[in-house]
Length: 333
Image 1: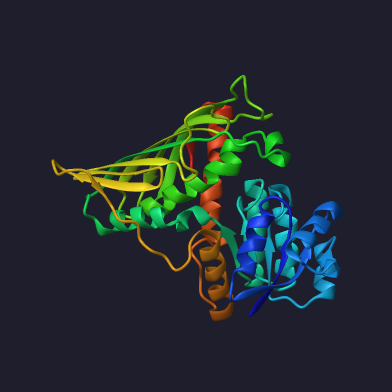
Image 2: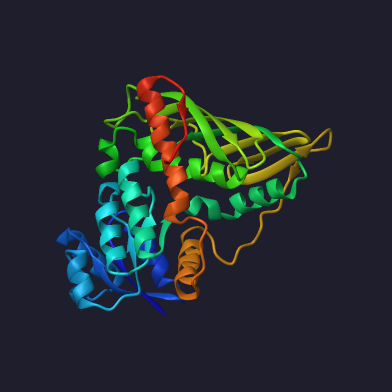
């Protein structure tokens, strides 16, 4: 069994607590939580030993023997926690986004490279059964080349906390998932982005909670695909699924993923509702298993910090496009 320290027990921390507790490969060595009220509540709810909950990662590292760290802190704390773990020689599985700025993200990547220690980002939206179904159809080539992609995401959650204070909550906190999925589905990298953001008058967020973006992607052969992304984090009324609604316009037909249902239409054939693939693991459980395999067998997972830097760069490219009102060229250099 791989022993982990989880840093951050509130909010999204619950999902990871439940995921680790359900695992047959990973168990807890200890925890870090700065808020004693949250620490007491979670120990009561999950039956943890309160003596294994520390207020700093340094205290946890001095007190328990661990093989890895799961970082579930707010984005502004991702870099110091991840760097401290990497300096201790412990692999890190971190919640998205990789960091709260591209410069902070590069600090993590540079540290992981210098120390030769794994840092993996939890991009769980790649690993839902319906997303994997869509990916298999695209990879099969049955629809030919993709010319355009339309992504629509509309949700109105009231999380509270740090998200309400973000300058661009939709793009930083949620669209990072969809941007990462675009790279995953297209097997290509963005080359330019243009768009604008705004905050509806009824928004409960401090920053812009709605956006419209145009991306151009290019694959290894130089073939370009155009993407339209429209979303709101304070939508009222009809909502999409968490994974968004997707339409791929291809040379031989169309492929859609709407409300987690995958459909294809080739030429004049009838619309087909495709069976969803069965997965032994999905979402966070998939990521935890992949992390375990990577650490114990020295394998390279898909969403390393080195790869995920490109997904995060899309976020900050979009923000630069909002603020300059000019097309932005993608770069992680």
